[in-house]
Image (cartoon, rainbow, N blue to C red):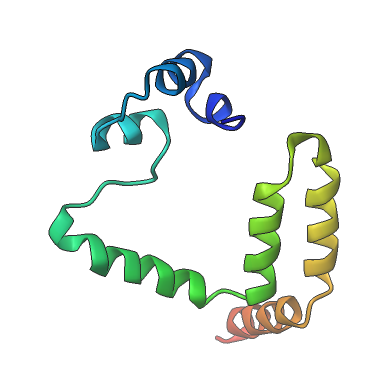
Length: 107
């Protein structure tokens, strides 16, 4: 309840919470509650593609990102800075940076 006004605005959040009205897909997309709308026939394949893409990321970075996103507003920017500091020193960051630099140095 407390995050909804930050996502959709106070007026819409109040209406939804007090009336129980359910948004359709287009309204949810316009309000920022969903990142995209796909036909139902493509739903499972699209969800798997998204999950696979997330799964290819560094697990530590994924966990920390989820933690930062879930943190209360008053913990920011400290929680963001802490996550960046930890990830900056991670072995995965070093591996990716080395891989990037090697690609750039190739003729």
